[in-house]
Length: 246
Image (cartoon, rainbow, N blue to C red):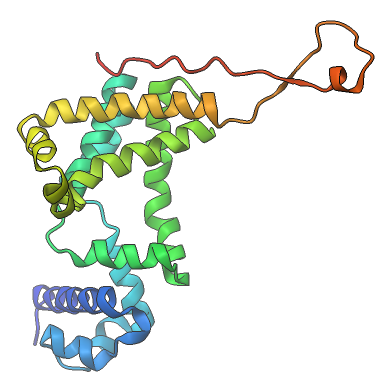
């Protein structure tokens, strides 16, 4: 009779095998028999542990989206700290989470889903990713003095996460294109965190200054021509960037 530990090990072996195959071929290109063979388990283990291939795929996506145990505590910490410190903690969270992946299939599987989202992925997105997105927007909003739901804050979160994670998820490409940059960041990780924090705030301010909808200004005096009565466009003066240092 198998133990709970044996059962969990079997589940994990199936998910790891399924993750590798799904990442390579997609959901429709993988059979239960192939997953069982790759995992080294009986074919009956898949319906026993997961019920169906659809459930197995959803569970595999959930595992792919899991935050690492090392990064998880940083999320709650970021919202309790001073705004500037919290922003740097959020950057550290993104770095720790991206560097802690022990396998490459989660990255490849999620990339496949980002290009062609499945219904299962959209469900997992709501469960796993939306809560992370929400607190990251809160962190960036506090540090930039703006609203969490504003376009500029959302842009800042996208810029921050992608920049923080890129040097660890895309190490092979960056090491080929700019090995000196990668080496400098490796030698000074705290400086890298500071740099990304400052760039995040700059992204927020620059987006607000250049991309936010422009509001018409009231005319200085009454005009008679049609051209003169058209609203003038006023540039927003929100390009001042706060320092991320504290």
